[in-house]
Length: 382
Ligand code: ATP
Image 1: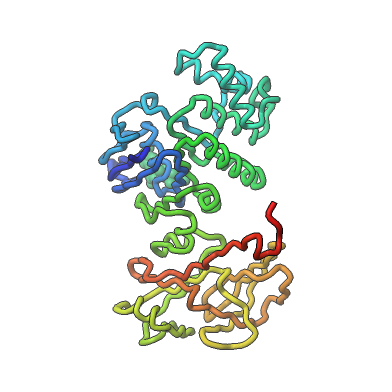
Image 2: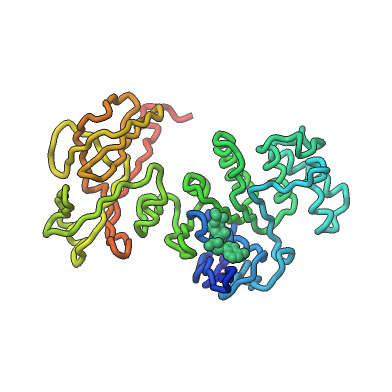
């Protein structure tokens, strides 16, 4: 039995003119016990509304939510045994970290002061903030305040963590560190977690699975790698991955795809995949666009518009037949802006989508990643 079931959830709001806004439409999702699910999508896609419905902070318009098989749709937040962490840490400014950690327990449990203290100290130890227990929020950095906010959720020993953009207020480096810490903590505690973010990097790096939302509708739910390599549609292909996938609008022309400026030859497998379609969109990720020495099958000339050095690699932004294309090359690769380079789009790495519906017709072939064994690399077993 799933720990959390969201069963055909719809949430409508009324706007100022009494018109309905459908924030979430017919959403069905199931989470296993201990799973870390990330709800991701652009601003306004309905992710916070979904989280608030799971928390019991919003009523639902249609559908049911169940915890451990039991309906909780009409239960209060207190009855659901959840703990929430928000973007703004919402700590009590006049209380120390220790008091902030223990305060919720005082209000919602009949634990003794000694028991509350013990839980606060344990959570602080887990989060590496033991030395800060007697400091007030204004004496703490943003990262330390967010740790206290996380600690406040941990001490409650809930069945479910609900986190709404908890890292948005932190700088990039701290965010990356906290991503790992939250993930580790969640694994150690084994508490089922729903985590909301608009940041696809957070989704890719943290979630056991990702649910991608757009306009209140679920676009895809899958592991990060499934969403990356096997996007269900153009929206997911575009949203997941940084820099984004490159796209070309093409028409099917016998055994090839054509636009005003490009022609792409298809093998039988891809020809079969597009059969019956007239307008398709070819997608290829930046790392799959290869700079090659000479022209060949499915190679195209690209004019370098901008070189974006990242250190270990450069992103080249090029003009290919009037379409802006991004490719990733080694950091040492030097090329001048304005130069022409030859690019190959290997057929095994392309995605094809039905242009009108956006539905994926065929995705790229996954690399079969084989991790070398100790004997392969000539090492010794220790
Ligand atoms: P963000 O990342 O910007 O927080 P989100 O994906 O979390 O966005 P929601 O906050 O869930 O999106 O909002 C979904 C839609 O519902 C939006 O169109 C929003 O304007 C609308 N909405 C949310 N809350 C209310 C409300 N209380 N009253 C009216 N409309 C609302």
